[in-house]
Length: 109
Length: 279
Length: 140
Image 1 (tube, rainbow over the protein chains, first blue to last red):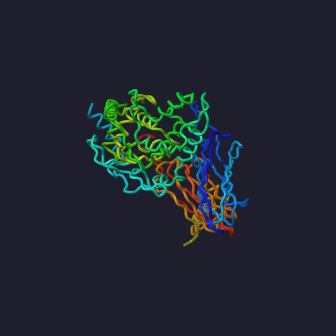
Image 2 (image 1 turned 90 degrees about the horizontal axis):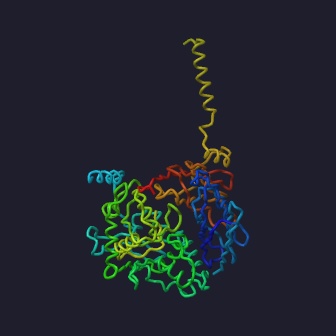
Image 3 (image 1 turned 135 degrees about the horizontal axis):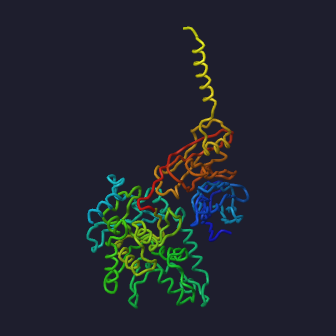
């Protein structure tokens, strides 16, 4: 498990049925690119978040493949349709096998 | 000797230099709340009439990042800070939150720091945190410019966001302030530059592709795009000194604390912007 | 004019050379390879895709970019001047509210950021923006 990885998401608490909302997501992660070298000149191996998925009640909203050029603390902003009340799940997959998750519920106004 | 210095300074500063442009006119609103980014310079500043926050010298995209508490990635570290403050640490079985139940009670604190305590010592926020940890929590002190300290000082500083910086520079603070002022104007390093050479004499101009600010510290700890994390004031002082190829004073040293007091006073009237976004 | 053997030879070799050069692929880059892997060499249009990035990046470590292509199933981003050009691919699911994505990326130097959208009808769109990446004055 990479150290000190903290997800953060912004989702409105309520929406009208069928409304398009803006979602922002962030996760604190170094995104070690594999380009850097340590003090002895050895390459520090790549270790990044390689995939981010947002789904609502199990249906995919967006599925992002990340490479090393995504900045430290990967940030995404995108839009989702809210057909009914339910849960947004956010999943981040780490090169080291760890999986980080966050869930936010939305009620229909 | 003077000519050498002048040439060295001119060489560095005039690179893209004839095309200096001043601070932007943009206004800072965060989460809809207007935050002032300029003020009349305090009386003790002889060579500057208006003080501007570092925000005013950044590109539009960078400025935009600070205007929303989600786009501002510093907030993920504020979350870390809140978690740290809620966790028990040390022999007394307490967390910060055991005594400081509501972080909002810290409002106004950052705006007055650094300040002189009853024992006549100049205290920074880091000192206050570590004093609490060692004397009241029975915990190990945190590394002065480490990530835990940066996270917690960001939480505390945030409670003063929007409030005007107002540090005492007279009475018991005067000798520290004078020392800080001397340090600010002293040329150091292989490049023989003082803080003033860039941040007072040349703010608003371009140094290569960087837009030089007044070097204000009202937004610290700041999330820097260059290292994608919160940076403390002393870390920044240290970096600046290395950039002029000087041996930096130690993190947490008397020199840096005095400099911090002097610099805070140069920002009197600017709003606290913690956690800010800078280059 | 009589076509001497010399003239035939010159004309012949010229057209052979032209034919040979025309047949060669343009000098291929890693980015071109990556894009070829998506499009299979198909033509790309530049209408209907928007790529937004700053003209001058304040810091190459964190450059905000946004891409939008209504009707796309996915959009791939490339940084053609980076050691590895692939940046990210946005794949839009059934509940995507729009085919738009914004993120922050690392650019090693001044270069073109390229976006390739794969459309639902199998066609491809392409947009490119040049972003200047500079060195800070203080060496930091």
